[in-house]
Image (cartoon, rainbow, N blue to C red; front, side, top):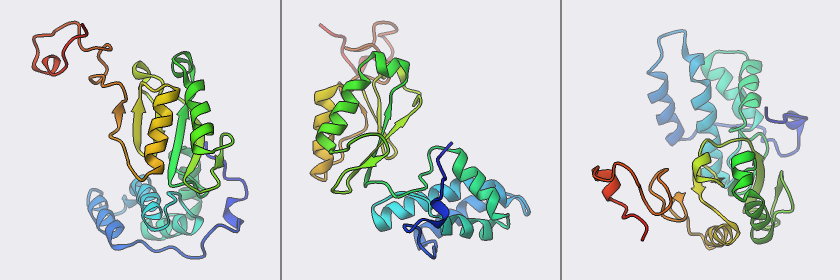
Length: 218
């Protein structure tokens, strides 16, 4: 559950929030899925639209209190019901974060495969002191997260909405350096792994077209 302590009255909270044209188009599309009187079911996607809009407009993807109130108004539901959803799911950030939100999995599979090196690289290259902190240049915020569901390609670093897999210290350094330069490397395995196949390529069912896309290791 996301820490909501005192965020409602904090100085970083904007006084007002309004959806932009891009968000309004998404909202119209989503609300069309629900029958009359059931629009409250759209609270999750609307929270996500808020977070994406804040990222576009401010460079910090988070959900202000004023936006939650606007969602409650649009969906004809009590504001507390929106707060309950926003504080339950860790995907929603209730405080400003850096342009690149580094979400580091440190649970058992990632830890066994070297997540400590990933954390150390984030501190070293991104300039983040520890979990929950933002670098002095405002580019990076680092958060410790639970399992990201890609254990076979551990360790994993989620940057905003993208997964970077099969990391180690030097590959994490290179990823963060690219982000600093304004380059966004393609997400996925950083060692060229095909989906969740063994390193070097599939070793079974190799006659399938998908398997043929990656040659086996020599």
